[in-house]
Image (cartoon, rainbow, N blue to C red; front, side, top):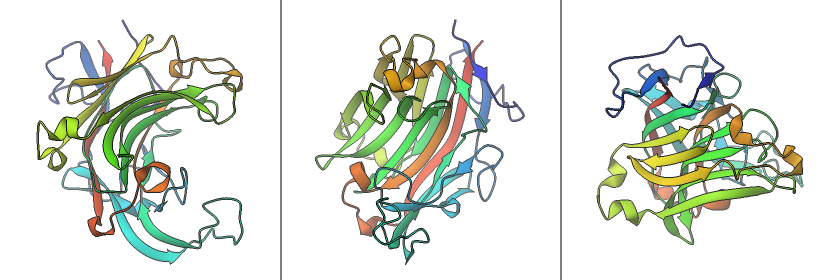
Length: 283
């Protein structure tokens, strides 16, 4: 039996009446149902700020994440203003940009709520316009990337201009900031051929994690299985297994950058809507 070790209080535990896909072996130990108004609970969520990673085009800020009508909305917007971190000629790609052209949000549970093993479930509706790069992912709490370990429960972006949904895991090797990947890239048409209105609906992404494997699902369809006997870091990660440590959760809507592709300016504002985030443990 897998065990779940939580490093956060259980003040918001909901043990009953939320549905467990008729699987009585799991019990809910924490959730955020986003039933409030305004910003998500800052006792749980942090807000990333600025140009952060992957040469992405959006400036992250807290204002673009808000609760409304029972969901968390992460909204990407077109905005033009000065970059307050701008430094002419800077070797940093974020500081080298004179202007902010787009804004969005990335919220994380870093240093506030982490989990080790169990089930993570997120019900969400994602934007699929060109340039959109929504994600549900986790990072380990110790060591730098990628030796900390990364699980991409969901990413959506274009590969050679073809939209895909991805389910991945990454860990470190013998080169600093260089990752080993276990990736599954499923063409978006795999889903839309079965449901032409797929993008207009909410879907459930799930991560089942124990000491042996991580399994990633979309609407109960298994997308990828990661064998944790093979996820051993290289020397920069002290040859440790980053998936035997607590992880925290990230939800974000990126734009463009290394993987998002050409941004469709006619698609703004883009909305990534999250109905809930839930974590279960085995009884």
